Length: 509
Ligand SMILES: NC(=O)C1=CN([C@@H]2O[C@H](COP(=O)(O)OP(=O)(O)OC[C@H]3O[C@@H](n4cnc5c(N)ncnc54)[C@H](OP(=O)(O)O)[C@@H]3O)[C@@H](O)[C@H]2O)[C@H](O)CC1
Ligand SMILES: [K+]
Image 1 (cartoon, rainbow, N blue to C red):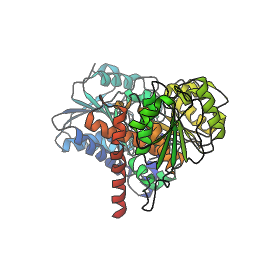
Image 2: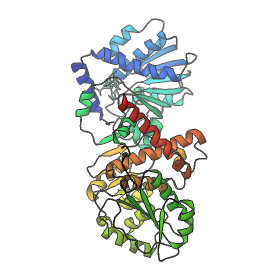
Image 3: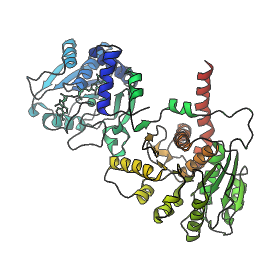
Image 4: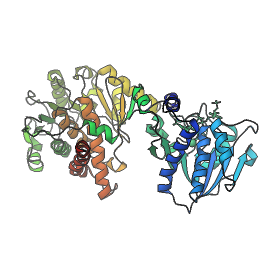
């Protein structure tokens, strides 16, 4: 799913009005109906609702939503914020203003003295500003937004929190801090920047039927990975296949006290479809691996405690290195040798990333399209510091372009950047997955998918999605609090089957 900028969204709006064709007031009605449809699934008629409206089209939506909810027996009141008494609202705001039934209490606020300290209601629907915000909020609007934020009510924003820009980090000036945002058609970039989290809350995108042709034609550097994107990517295991067909994978890692990391990667790699897995560990890991993962073959290093040398690396479709590796001098030497010899894209994680960050010569040795999977601290070691999330995103894109690698920056909505400078935000996963070993599992999945013959871009997007989906399915059963990395592996089969089952059902129809 593409992420469009605020001007592109405005153009999509105009294009739809002209080419569907549909009157702009009817498009507003469609958007308001889509909002109400989702809202009424969450909140019953017992709630007292206050709808705070600006006088642009976001406010117009607010008025239409008030009318629709009132017709469904919700107890609704409307507050219009209009600093200049004489200034008319947008054309569609004014139409909906005239259509507002008399039974809905309507208050207009024109100056600061009229703003209550806080609002006494169960739910506030925030429709002051939407995608048309053009500058930070001040004056009367700021007073109202502060009162909204101080209220005990559940706050639901229409399209985007009032005061938040669609395409960037939070500006100066007050911004509504909603519990939920119900947004139109496409996610906004602002929803995916962690520091905006207080101004987004939970979010849901509802379809309002903007032209899909127009959206398909738009250029966008940012994408939100949806389940339908994933269904298109997932391959079927062919009937006439054998374990060689699915590729040979090699994992390198583990050190004394950290063999568990490479065990997790190995198990996840096999669960992600690798035909054959060889895991290279220091001698202390031999028995552990053979016992914990009987499906993989194990080669051992000359060293007992650390990786100090390379195994044979020919004939592998994919190599992953890093989990549990440590940053010993001898492991650095082995990594350097590996990077000099290897030709295919690899997966680089954990201490292998740290070693690359500490040794400037290594980054240029990485084969094109190698996937690196840093968490933010590791990425900072690689690419340097940033001021805010938007800068971090730019840094990630630039790093990928400059070094021709994919960066999987782990976190909520893990972002995958490609050498072309595109960024794909993941839509699965939960806070329960912030647990020891979760990253080792991801490395195994990515190595497994690469060995299956997926391109690096597809392996990264698909792998991150499946990792998150397995975590979500595990959390559904086990809860987020107790989730451990092994649970993610245990639920990987369910993740793959849930996506592929849907995919093949669609194909058969
Ligand atoms: N395509 C869609 O998704 C649809 C969206 N709809 C809804 O429309 C809004 C966008 O509406 P728009 O009228 O463009 O913008 P807003 O309602 O957000 O606000 C515009 C007015 O507010 C003024 N403004 C902007 N920033 C400030 C500020 N900081 N202080 C005071 N006033 C401000 C702006 O004035 P300018 O001076 O900038 O011209 C406008 O007067 C979208 O979010 C959806 O909710 C449609 O209903 C359906 C299709
Ligand atoms: K809003």
